Image (cartoon, rainbow, N blue to C red):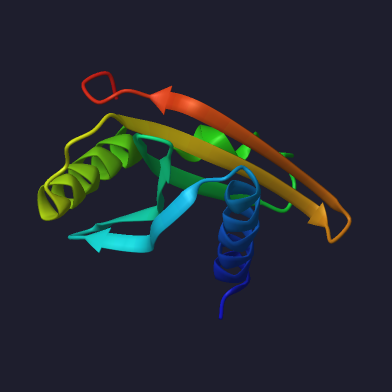
Length: 122
């Protein structure tokens, strides 16, 4: 597996652990729709949360969350609409970003951006 893929998978695992400690109910991981993938779909109380995880080994070229550009947001929105249709969505939604900088095994920075963006404003 390529190094960047290992970094991404490691970040998603860290994000899942973080979310579980925050009492999120994990509904799906790596949910695919056409050319898009939602890293984590969870519920926080009555809110359906679509979560994009971005992981980097350092932040020399900028913070990981900056990589969630307009195109990526639109892909996430499209995929979230498909997911909501599939489950007959009936509650509030939110789009979050979890940014992880994993410099080493003992130097990991996790930032959770709730309501990181809104559909229609992406």
